[in-house]
Length: 169
Image (cartoon, rainbow, N blue to C red; front, side):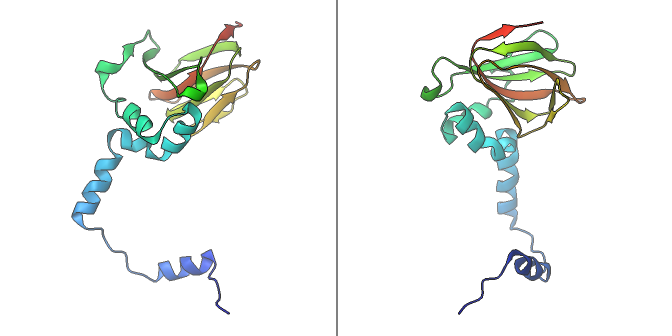
């Protein structure tokens, strides 16, 4: 009967091996993939699920993040918006990327429709003090209320799925 090694055994084996640098062409391809939209590669699947978009559509959308020509300029502290249509399962909702400076806030509001705020860069904090960094999502059901604030020193970039909201404050 064969013995299945557990993860600690694999770690022990790995610790005895000498590190080997990848070939230069593999290293180059890896770093090239991580530049631009590639820095968001770990989020592709979740963004696709939240926004009902294919992986290729998510990749295409995120490839535009660093192109100032595709952004709509915002008013301080909002740097700008990049609107996009979510997939067919989310008809009636709006999608967008929003880049905000420190101090930006979304005042207390009630959601008539579902909302998802997915943090790509930076940090958001809700009114309870919960912090949401890159890769974290704030999911709000219809009828729920909250306020959100930008924390940290640099700009914050979010992907937002939303519908109608009622401002409360």
